[in-house]
Amino acid sequence: MNYKIYLSPPHLSGDEGKFIQEALESGWITSLGPQVDAFEKEVAEYVGIRYALALSSGTAAIHLALILAGVREGDEVLVSTLTFAGSVYPVLYLHAKPIFVDSERESWNLDPNLLEDFLKKRAKIGKLPKVLMVVHIYGQCANLEPIMYLCDKFGVTLIEDAAEALGATYHGKFAGTFGKAGIFSFNGNKIITTSGGGMLVSNDRDFVEHAQKLATQARDPAPHYEHSEIGYNYRMSNILAAIGRAQLRVIEDRIKRKREIFDYYQSALKDLPGIEFMPEASWGRCTRWLTVITVDPKKFGADREEIRLALTKEGIESRPVWKPMHLQPVFKVYEYIGEKVAEEFFEKGLCLPCGTSMTQEDLQKVVDIIISLCRA
Image 1 (cartoon, rainbow, N blue to C red):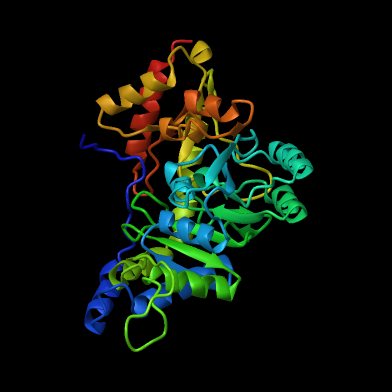
Image 2 (cartoon, helix red, strand yellow):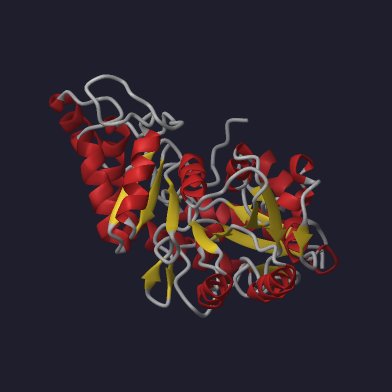
């Protein structure tokens, strides 16, 4: 439907036209160009990492990261179960096997204790996974210190899917900069957008240079078209990079506004029985990319779905929390490690509209509808 208030729509900075005009005047409107180069440099500088590669999507970035991490047919890749399917599809593109790991409650991200138990058991039988892909959910970092320690101890390559967490921090350091590689998404609903696109970042120059080659159809250095490995058409266009440069200039403003919106909802709804908010973990800054609540229907008097439908009726978009990957029909045959914590978040969780262009009137309308449904 055509909503009047969307969940997390794009919010232009006002400078996009200027950068697009620069791209047009340069004559570069394809998948290379000065705007791409500048956007990569500026994102790398923002998050504090050496190298960045602008790509067509976050999923493309994950695919390349897995290839360069050495994932091959039959290998196993640990993945957070509470995520979007785009985190997992590239594992299957490579005919590898995902193993889904449940969430912990402090951040809703991958549980390091479950990870430790699993890796110890696998080490005893000499069957360790190739990669751990930890996903930073809804703008919040996972507890990376124990995760990095375990990956180092057991020789597992760490890749960070920070598609939802550009600008989030862990002990003052940005998401996506801890592992062998990090991934960001600039999809239309993200905190900043290029309309569609993603980025691969790493401190390993060879890793990024090889990814760049693969992303550009794996063309070998020759005057003719020579190919010695399989490549992909994954580069970002110069026009989209121009949009990204304008967006990046306001990212801290967008994070500030996302957090203000969260605070507004929390202040207005915190005293309602059965309503709780996704917590901010002690170790860093959550961008609050999405504001997420959980609803206990026994205490509140209505369930998550009743709230969602009531909002929809008024032209307001909201969305259930990610359905865990181990519950998805396409992934049901793969191993799951956990205690159904992510399932509880899905059953009770609802993402509220939190676009940074929302007015106070918009926010209050959402609040009033939720309050009206409380029958405790």
